[in-house]
Length: 29
Image (cartoon, rainbow, N blue to C red; front, top):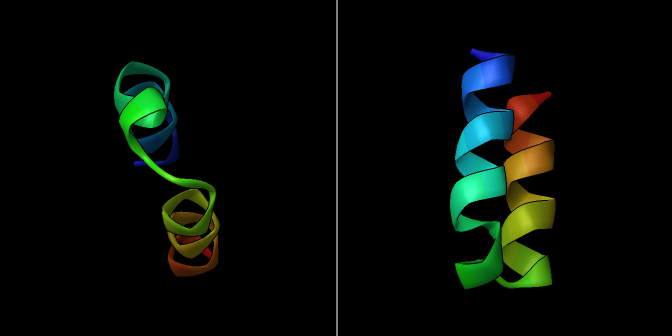
């Protein structure tokens, strides 16, 4: 799951804001 999320972030990370990225990190924990 972690690798899948990392790949997804790498693909769509440009469309995500810093806040959304931070939220994903907290949720992933």
